[in-house]
Image 1 (cartoon, helix red, strand yellow):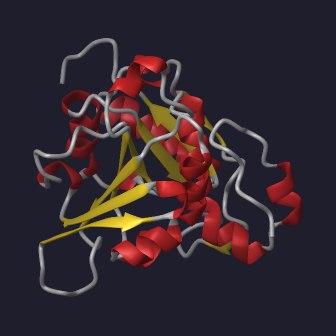
Image 2 (image 1 turned 180 degrees about the vertical axis):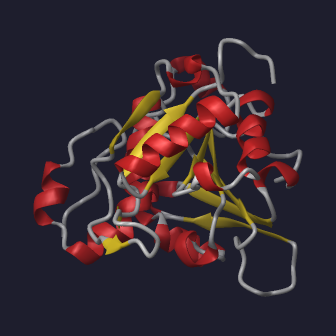
Length: 252
């Protein structure tokens, strides 16, 4: 079985050649997030960070769906196993991973608006803390005891089709002051998302400056493709990705 690459490794050749289609589909979200962290410079904690005990990495998933990202601590741990394993192996990696998942369908139909679950130990001594919040990302809170996120990820958000994302995007970039990693089903939707962010949501061009990036092919896209029900585009999860960083012009 292919091992997940270390956080500091951008190599995906072995995964593409050896992983089965089922493995590529199952691990795509975790590996996409892992490579995103590496590109943004979160592959290790600097010497100045080591004074912060425990070393904590906080990640949020906006628009989370319980069927895709998991609706319980156990399910999340399974869905993001590759990420957890790689972080646990890092010599100067985090000691605690806080993973917050928010979205209208972040939880199954349990009747609860908020669920908090934490304290799962995984390999290498990495502690996983998970919190679910049901609702739009900008309308929920993960608690004052959690630091703002180091990175927010949105899988196939479809910015181009949902005006409701505007407030959440601004919340990430201007209030949370965090990078926003977003994936798309294909090149056309990635371009549509980019245009919507730029023209309709008012994100300045500097949002795509380094360490962020403009839409491009994601090397850890899922393997499966399916036809769209509304046009001729093929849909492939995590096919393209882009990353926005808080703009130099801080006006919201």
